[in-house]
Length: 378
Image (cartoon, rainbow, N blue to C red; front, side, top):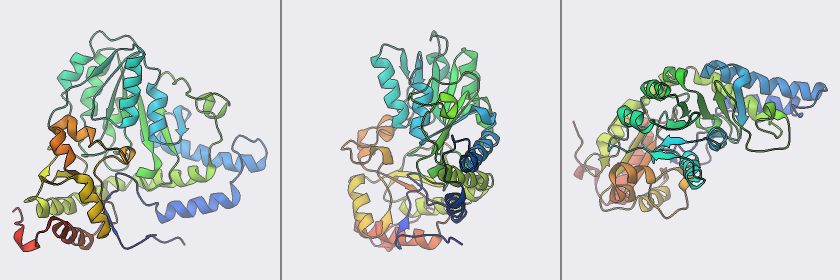
C-alpha cells in the first residue's frame, strides 16, 4: 500500500497551487504502469489495455461533468483546456479576475481585432450579472463569455447558473473554468455551461493531465499532427496519468463534504489573523481559501519568511510565480496597494488544527508580535 507522502514536516497551506496525490491515486498509477503502459492508439493487446484506462477516465469525467464521454477532450491541464476552447473565439467577454490562461487569450484575441469586453470587477470579487448582460450585447454569433466557477486566489464563487441565463439569452456561449471548484463544491450550476475546464492536480490527482468537456460544437484543435482525441488534441495520451486522474475524479464525488468541513479551520485561521490583516474578497467563496493583505508588508517577503519557518503559503497564482508584479486579481478588486501585501492561504483535506497553530506562531514570529498581543475576533 502507498501511504500519505510528505517531503518534510512543513505546514502546507498552498492547496490552490497544487495538491498532494492521494494514496489511492498513486496505487492506481502503479497498477497501470505494470500492465497498461502501452500506446492507447495502438490496436494490439498492449495498446488496448492502455486504451481502457483512457476511456474509463473519459467516462468518469463525462458522468461528473454531465456531458457525453465522447465530448471530453483530454489535455495537459486547465491552461490547455481554456486555450483550446477560447483561442479561436469570434469575440469574448471576461474580466481581470480570470486565470492567466483566459486573460492572455482575451488579450491575444483583442490584438487580432476580435471584440473583447472587459467586465468591471467589484471589490467583492463577484461579478454583477446585470453588467455581464450589458457586455453581451451586439457581439457576433459564437462569441464566448469566460468565467471561473471559483477564483484561484480568493476562492470567490461566481453565480454560474445566473450567468448562463443571461449569456444564453444574448445568444452567446458560456465557458467555465472549473479548475478550482471541481471536487470542492457542488457543480449543479455547471449544467448549463457550454464548456468546462478541469485539471487533475487540483483534486489530488497527477499533474500533466486535465480535460475540456463541451456541449454542442467541438473546438478547433490548437495542435496538428494526429487523430488522437478525435483530432482535437493530437499526441499520445498517458494511460498511467489517466488511471490516476480517474481515481481522483471518482473520489471527488464525496469531496465537497470533506472540503466543507474545512471552513471551520479556515475561519479559525482568519480569527487569529484578523487584527493584523484584512480580508480580500467578501463574497461567498470556497470553504478552504483565505486571501488577506498585511498592511505595511510585502506579500512575497512574508511568503519567503514563512517558508524559512516551515509554513508554505503564496502571494498569488502559481502561474504568476517569478514575476515582479503583484496579484492582478487583487489589483483589479482592491487596488495595487492591497495586492502588494496580499497572501493566499489554502487548506486541504489533510490540514489539521495543530498545523494551523504552528502557522499562527510562525506568522506572529515573522510579524514581530507575540500571540498574546494579537486579539482574537469573537
